Length: 329
Image (cartoon, rainbow, N blue to C red):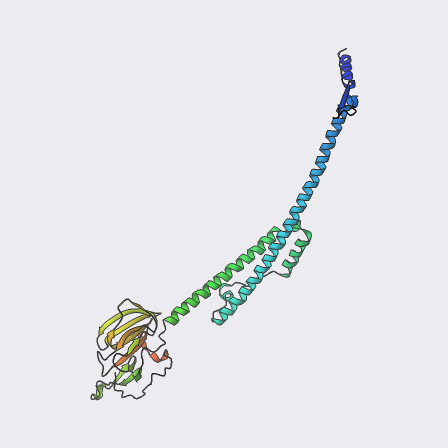
């Protein structure tokens, strides 16, 4: 009985008419449409289902086009990255060539021979083929380990070249310092009156037993107060009176090299002062154990005197006297 009553109520509800009226403005004819509640609800249900289905289909297509656009963007970025990597590898190859040429020019051993580095860079044929495959197949063909390896390879080569250039820079800086510390200019103008090595003692010519002595430098004679210059960069270690040398200057140039300037009339530098090659440091005189105005000039390596003429360039203003009985010491 209860079920019969419920069925009747539902039947009356679904069969109840629903009227739609469209009343246009301006007094035009009214449009009237009538349907049952069941038809109206069915239409709403069908319309909702169609709308949901259409949204789903459209959503899938939107996702597809968005994904396709992202893929195209990613492919473009990959192409740009690939070109930049190719340029980087070409640049690294040029840097490697320059590095080799610089080492050859500076007579430096190739870095690979010491560090056991291959010292090579750039993509192989397999790398290039793989890159073309990526460009053709799209982002899904990307092999991240291979890209990481390629980027790591470029970074490693960059570090090697940087280390090599730092070594070259250090070597060139060291060579420049060594050059600046090498006494290779004449300390003054004049004529050489006594050479390096054994000679007759000009102070004891009447003593036949003491005529020979070792002369640790060269003597350059000229007028009193002739200008005397530092022959290389260095630091003044001594400046003052020293027995036998008179007013003397000792300059330490580093690398175990030092120079001595003796018999000066006036010293223009102080102990601890840094001097440059060609800087005026004193005037020529005849102080100490001397027979006339001249400069006694020595070059010492690890405190052992060597022939200064090994370092000096030929100068038109200086003339050697090869005579053993020179008058000036």
